[in-house]
Image 1 (cartoon, one colour):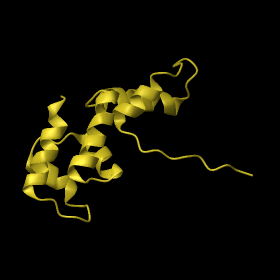
Image 2 (cartoon, helix red, strand yellow; image 1 turned 120 degrees about the vertical axis):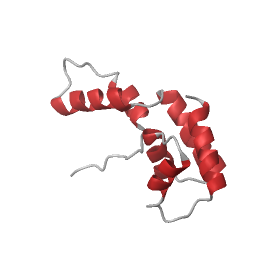
Image 3 (cartoon, one colour; image 1 turned 90 degrees about the vertical axis):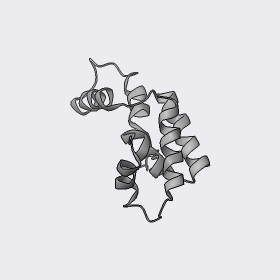
Image 4 (tube, helix red, strand yellow; image 1 turned 180 degrees about the vertical axis):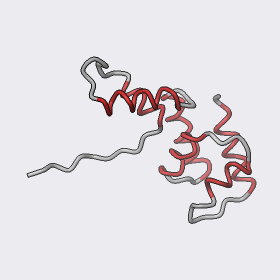
Amino acid sequence: MSEKADKKLLTIPEANQILQKIDVEKADQIQKRTLDYTTKFSKAQADGAKKLRKELETECGLSEEESVELVNIMPKSVEELRTFTSGWRKLLSTETLEKILKILHSKN
């Protein structure tokens, strides 16, 4: 009988923080590649990423998935932000987009 694993959404910096704890000598190829990827592409510190996620969710009404996506990407302009949010099933006002950018870049 197989057990179902719990799933948890993580930002790239949060995943990197977890992978930093493994012994690289004992890690398999996938773990090593994932550690390398998360190290290269983290755009925030893990603790900061968690705070950003929570703030985006509470202040801007974003879902967990949406906040994780934006923290991973860290868009720099309203136009770039619109590119990512256009695929979502809700339309965000320019005011909300500007608020998102302010939050994303307030700690970086």
